[in-house]
Image (tube, rainbow, N blue to C red; front, side):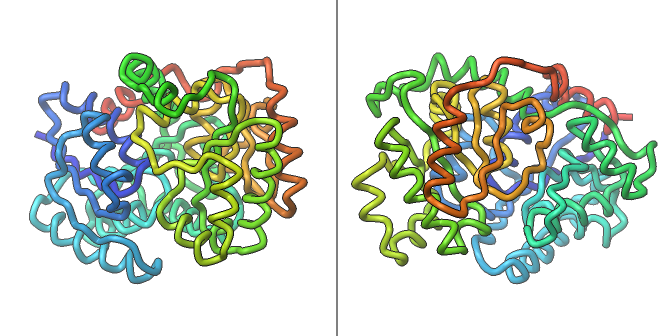
Length: 360
């Protein structure tokens, strides 16, 4: 029996792990123990995803919650270490680039437990981003690195990671898009509930610290979306932290008058909103890819992206939020659409390829 401890704690990781956990449940030789750090602890940002994605109830819920990076990561590291000492797994599986990823990889490495990193090799080359630091450290602590793209493989090669540690498996998010896209069509009623017309609105998400913690950038995004709303309705599922920041900045009330602000939605509803939007404006790495999977043009409200392939092929436009006019123009230009649909992220069987490696 191969014991695998999966460490997750944030919305994107729930989605990625759901695909691998489903595949793992069909492998009798593998036993998975799920550790939920509690990095996202709001019910709409956590529990609902476990229900909708049919992820097993976590074996351990650490309930760490939010806090400064060092404080949060330190508490996770301490709590995860106790679990690993109890379970003594053959592998620790981490996903993406959050503080949960860093803490899981570091706890395992300190105990000499092999680490496998899903979504390895992504680089924005901006060390000011906490996510960039997390992914670089996690990659360097991992014994096995599952890369989603050829670009990611080359990034790892340039950093001196041995070839025999790196596996090009494709993107588990594409696996998820295929499965949950069909599920959302059957089960989500969000379009009817919000009275939205397919391809008749802009979907926006804002949560990264580089935007929410910079008043000038956040204001540019908000005012840009308000300008866009004169041409196309804008729907913004608002993260609790971002809502609080906007309220303190005195922008929330005006924003609520101009665009459609809604509470964070369940994953299937989010998929449905993505699939049917005219264009997506986001600072989320995962949403950028989901936009492409559902053939929706995307504007990335950042200075760079890890998913450079999407920019090269015209499905993603980088629009640094330096002014409202820049944001508005970027969104409306993207709404004109793209045509070429290259095969970038594998064949939709990344989860099985990952388990074939871990199971050996």
